[in-house]
Length: 396
Image 1 (cartoon, helix red, strand yellow):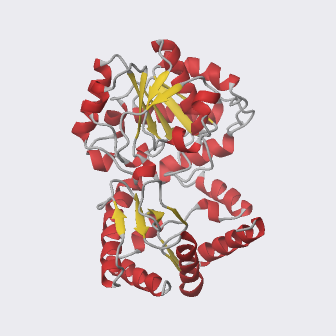
Image 2 (cartoon, helix red, strand yellow):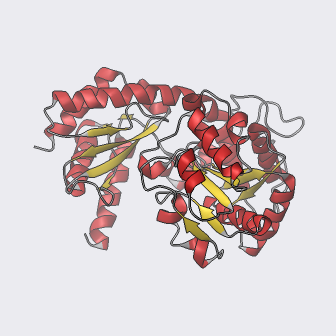
């Protein structure tokens, strides 16, 4: 596909998604600049959760008359305090990207443990989506404890033949299907790392929605680890940004490295404001999204079976979070076109983008990620089954 063809496909996608009256996930990235700015102005006055703003700013996510941040402080410091409180950590530092936050965290731990080797999953974000940055930029080395599409077991942690300074756990493991271990398995893995004198860092880009699966609150989950990173633009629909949270001494060192890595931005109040809005508006709703994702996933499986699709997979079933994968034995371009036609012709966006299956998958299998958010709560199981039937009809 040429660059012009891809540009036209993107234009069609955005038009179809924006024009759909029914979607499983309505995203701010589907909107315009004007709509995004208007949403920020509306969101600052739309507090729905507990008070989070500055002293005397009741009714606002953050006091709109507060001065803008300059190299941190102000609204950025407000966000850092809010997240540290939510996670139960001593301190937190705002970063422009999660990639930078995790590189800094892992680099700091390497200096403190004296071991620059990081144990992580081969499907973890730094291995698949960061162009080898841990080694190229931070001088770190990675090892893999398992190649299975799940978190490593306690036995695999204990039996690894060489030492490592940090164990990084991605919760949930996105590229394996947003999968999570059980609480007992997670506790056992952390204990095994401690037995090896390794520190534990959580890649919690999507930690916000893990509580229902574990039956635990955010503070209890975060307390298992020595440090944790969380993102704002994934589950909370913020503009960008991330926070690294942990002991005050680590966070202070991380602030130094943030500056060295070019992450001490002059002003960040739009991103910080959108993060506070997400914490206020989306975070309390995530348990309902997770619960309804199970309904949607089950109905999708029923719909594919009823439509006579010879082979499919909804993974995991039931979902562990409000996101899951669907696998189908068709070329990704064919599935993309059917998804677009369904949105354009019926005003229903069931699936967004499809991609080729991972290495080792059966040939000819494509995958898509399904997210259920506020807009998806309007779908009944019957609505999902009917939409699947229409989608399969467009493949014929």
